[in-house]
Length: 126
Image: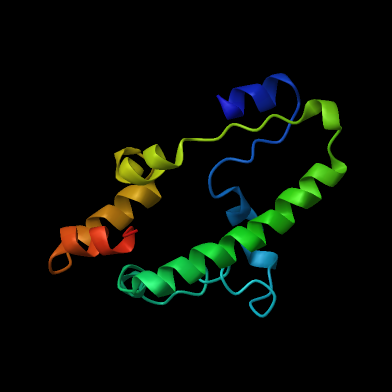
């Protein structure tokens, strides 16, 4: 839906992980969380982080993405901004139900670990 709206109204579709197209130009010292996966040597390190490390990374990514989003809003005509959000509960509980390559790669990696269900539960503990 986002892609179609952007095409129809000559807009920018900022889908999930849209900032990935900007990764090559980001400095690691300025955006350590956003460049974490760019510079990752072994994706198993990504899924083996503690819940606290994961939470800190998510918070850092949120701050970095917010900077990009504010830049986009500064250049956008305020009458031409549409924001669609998924219910956070759906985003977490149905994370791997999406068919995109990245989600399925992480799912397979996670399932190859010892006790993958427990690892997933710990990641999203309250």
